[in-house]
Image (cartoon, rainbow, N blue to C red):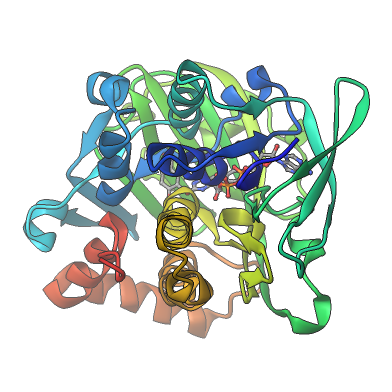
Length: 392
Ligand code: FAD
Ligand code: DHB
């Protein structure tokens, strides 16, 4: 097989890139190791920045989002019996976020790609990338029981944190920045009405978050130890911790329902730079992950492929390489700002197991400062709704 851009991975990064390129008339093939059912039901993020929603509109994949999403104009933070309420449009000159599950975004992107008759192979696992320093790199992959090859002009490694893209970069040229936090998130979906606002909570017993997917479906998270196991979390314990941590000791505010999905996600910041070598470009989780507290992973993947698509389009239309050469540099400026914000939110809202009494008091003082001062509220709101794209 032969194409202009070989894309490994049908997560948000790979799928958005494929639609951006096909819209510009550039041929690409997407290889995805999992089945369509698997990727369409993988529950992850749910907060979309305006830039992500705008891109879905530009690509004509926003019809269901408009019907089914929830608009979020507020962000609440609870701590020590107090409340910080951020009015997002007021603090950001009218901006807000949309709540729409990542797996719904993925379904809409896959439907568009398939309806337009362009190549997207499921159960096609890339095993090796060869020749990234030549003009014609080749992706080796397994599909329908056969070893196959895809020869391309460029390879886009959109294959997530555990893919083959990053290991194909020369290790000697990569700088790795890694920080593991000493806690994880236990996340569940429940058939119960959520709170009316997105509510982050800092409690003595640890962090909790009440988000939502619809007026009837709550998306709930609680901080847990890194070595924890789902078996330690029967539904009754999840509800007990949620009521306590959100300050609902009377159990009257947060409604309980059937929990139908559970998972544990570690909190980690990781950046691998640069994001390109020869004809291989990495995007999204393949090159960086952020702790989930800022709700940024998916939005950052979208920001990367927006920049990459412009570089590739310039190259194929005019032969110009300037944008491609600057890909890493342009993306990393945004990535580090997002790592900064996600780290700040993580440290503000969680209780590390080794937190000293001194650090606890500083944390409470910081929350109280935010509660009573507009400047830090504006800074949080601006980052949460999404910083402007710098390459516009
Ligand atoms: P991915 O979505 O990981 O997509 C990569 C794709 O590549 C996958 O479909 C994978 O199957 C495929 N692939 C991998 N290897 C190969 C191969 N060799 N050949 C072919 N295909 C391959 N972010 C938030 O903002 N909030 C959250 O609550 C949140 N929760 C998360 C929970 C979990 C368990 C994880 C892992 C991430 C979570 N994130 C969250 C982060 C967010 O979901 C990611 O940042 C986002 O999915 C990144 O998109 P991506 O396309 O770069 O990578
Ligand atoms: C959700 C996820 C996040 O990481 C976050 O910070 C807020 C909300 C969610 O899944 O709805």
